[in-house]
Image (cartoon, rainbow, N blue to C red; front, side, top):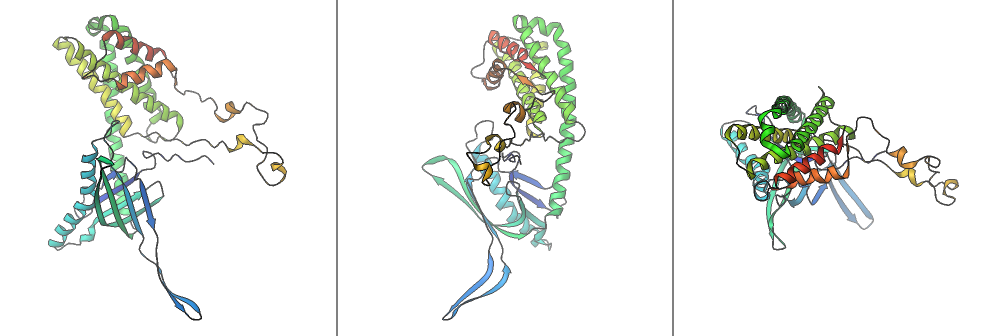
Length: 381
């Protein structure tokens, strides 16, 4: 069987806080930076008595399991939020609000158990209602800029259906809103592309062909993504995953291009408004795709490639490879129709446009035009 994808964005570990007394939606805090250590301890209510003749035990079934987490909230680089802010949010989400809101309910004569904290571990496949025993802040001179945590949790029950149902309903609502935003953004991008034939193109001058080509290929890939998302909004295979990743990358590159154009030269007011609008549109498309529609894939299992070693096929070992008489790589990585293709030059140019600092170190217009043309020429759907 293929090895399941275990990336944090695909199999997340998260905390879900839900105050059912208020009727509000549950709030999820995902550990984007995975814990460095996770220990789940399942215990028994068991006492063993040693005697001269041996031993015997009093067993009263399973006890309350515990979970210990240790890790950091990261540096805040690579597009991630500031690690210190994330730590404060984690503390508030897991420990502070749980105590405060339970106390408020108790003072009002309501059941404090209506405040729920759920530990949702998709990686290890368990979801529990828990109580936070400890939340520890650790600092180390070996990593002085990192906020480190130790969290100790105790299992209360596995009755989490109410909260998880509400969370799924809330996520569907978010996806529907994101899809609506994506559709409107795509329409506005098409309108902008049509406008580029006029005075915007004249203003762009020598780089107009490259920028127009980048806008065109980005629009085409975004349309392809919208087609594969469809009404179900379920992203599960490598084809849609590649499309989504590429569409998000192209959108951010286009956003950076228009941000740089407005930064490196004087722009008339009527043109400036359109270019800033285009920058915002492409940025929104990138954010919607990156944050809402996650690409998921499985890693192929290459066991059959190796086949048997000497005599192992006749002694209970590995059988002969089924790829013995075929083109192995073609068989295990078949060509998929409608998959996006990117040549090495386009990939390099796209990375350059994505990574450039439009505020402090913007590229020249000539470089932007050349990179944009390279990206557009090197991508086919």
